Amino acid sequence: MANPEKVDAVAEIVDLFRDSDAAVITEYRGLSVGELKELRRSLGSETTYAVVKNTLTEIAAREAGIDVFDGTLSGPTAIAFIKGEPVEPAKALRDFAKTHENLVVKSGYFEGKLLSKEDVQKLADLESREVLLAKAAGAMKASMSKAAAVFAAPLSKTARTVDALRAKQEAA
Image 1 (cartoon, rainbow, N blue to C red):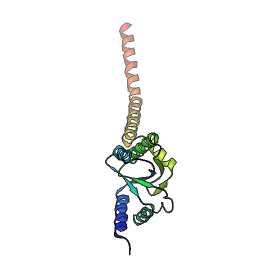
Image 2 (image 1 turned 60 degrees about the vertical axis):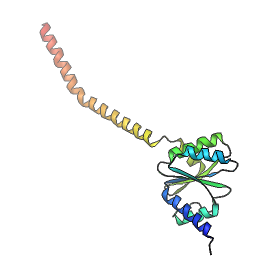
Image 3 (image 1 turned 90 degrees about the vertical axis):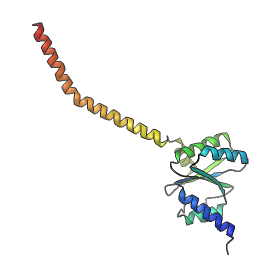
Image 4 (image 1 turned 135 degrees about the vertical axis):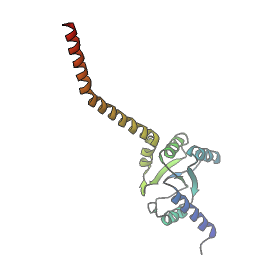
């Protein structure tokens, strides 16, 4: 018979996996309670940072339909469960790890795939969704402006030619 506390812990982790769009696995060995609190604050309100037991996490991940963690979890593990866009929380983890060497980003999970440490770093290096959308909108606007200029050029050239002919007629 399973321990009720462990069953509850697994159920809670299953809910966290199902409610999140991405997860980043870290090792927190050596971080103080105050530093963990600071890290949780820097991750924002849409991200839950939880210290987890590896065996229970592997069981919970399987129950949530995520089978990429089998055997990869080791050591003191904490997971950032990310709701929404994963770029900003990944940046927060990267920046926190730069100033606190005891935080080690080990791997992650996004869109059904296991992310390596390097993949999480690439994710953190991306610009936010809003910036990327603004750049795309700017590029589309520039393309439309160029197209408008191309379509208006023959009409403008005709108007200048007619004006030059009128000025030449008046001068003669």
